[in-house]
Image (cartoon, rainbow, N blue to C red):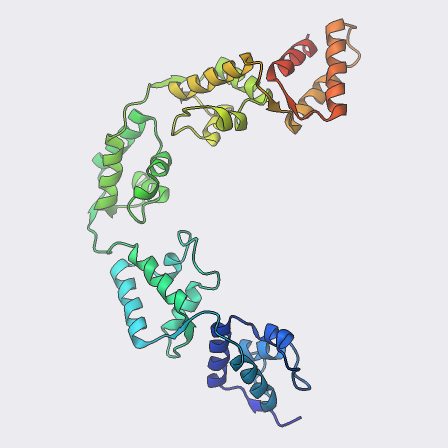
Length: 359
């Protein structure tokens, strides 16, 4: 084996460029190359060179790896990060006030899997790497979606906060629901956290276009049908519909014309003791659907694990009670359902069984 030589920065740049050009990692190169590697060159060695955990290498090993890479075709176009690209990136950061970490964050769901903010910040350093052209194109396409940071900021006054709260109460639509309804028409950077910051007072100023957008969209919405006190009777009815498998999944899968701002989590919150009032139109829509489903002979709901546990518990509590024929028949019916692994039932059947078992 020849004498070892230091691994230079130039060599590391060549290896990184070849890895980017071909899309082949060093270990994959050794596994799949057509010619056998020289003696002593193991799968982990080139990766150790790149990570810096090995500071020297056999020159013959280095030559073989570079030649093996040179024999491979490019899988994607690459560009060398130039001063012009760096200046363009700095200008976009200055224009938008958006750092690469945010630009490639939650909203960049379609970004290349191997593009991240650490790599982008590396472009700005003295060593100019070669990178996939798709990375550069994607990053600048992302920055093109952000507005100028020069969009005017204005103070958030108590009068504005009061107007915002008044619209929320008037329409019955939460800030989060308003943003979800608008979908892709919201100004860039406007999130529920932004609006909550305005309301809580944490944010003392806000972008004028965002502040105006929220008020304008609330003004286009009609007043809700007024909120109604949420009584124990209403809560009990909801609990019964849930036990019969009618809410929430069956409702949201089968109901027509569901109010646009009624969500599954909202419906679930109604069943807690914390809910004191509801939008009447929401409750009435759910109630009308559930009552119609109970009356429809073709309704079938999934006989789920929650129903099975409920029936087992009811049977356990009723064991040894009086020999009421209806209850005895109900118990035998339930045992048959459980034994036969019934998948779908009519909620009215379950309702009758629960009624008989509760006698």
